[in-house]
Length: 217
Image 1 (tube, rainbow, N blue to C red):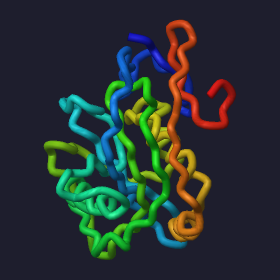
Image 2 (image 1 turned 60 degrees about the vertical axis):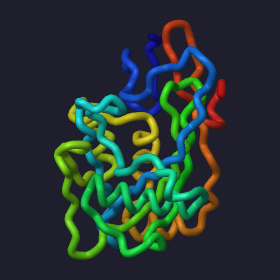
Image 3 (image 1 turned 180 degrees about the vertical axis):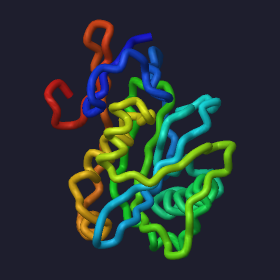
């Protein structure tokens, strides 16, 4: 299996990240999914919640991620289905209950590269932590959690304290530009969400992941 270099991950990693194994056959249809970036800090600072997936999990085992998962068939399709899945997954993975789907602010949409085995079309939402609630993991699907500034999470990944995958890294890099939760939400509420589909480019024995607009995409 080819190695790959992740742009923004702080250097070359000679193994595919969890869930990033390359596909040598026809592209797999991406599954619809939703993710919630939970925020705390108000007007003073910006911290995000990351949960650690069970290291024994077949997909992304051991990785630290934003709570989220696939849309279930009964949740329908379209934006409301993604919002319903986001609320459900957040409660299942972090024991956080949002009052309704209006509490979610759409931030981005990422589609896994066509060259990767397991693919998702993921809608990312922002949501402030509701007053009086605390995040908890179930100890099965997710085994640990932490509140990080985006910069601290990226630093912990570079020092190999935690494992992050490419989409999480790139989102943390975007979030690091904002000084507070309020500043981030004000920006997100006024932006148009355009789908982003990274591309895998093979260079000898190394597979590089590129974003639209980068040289070689």
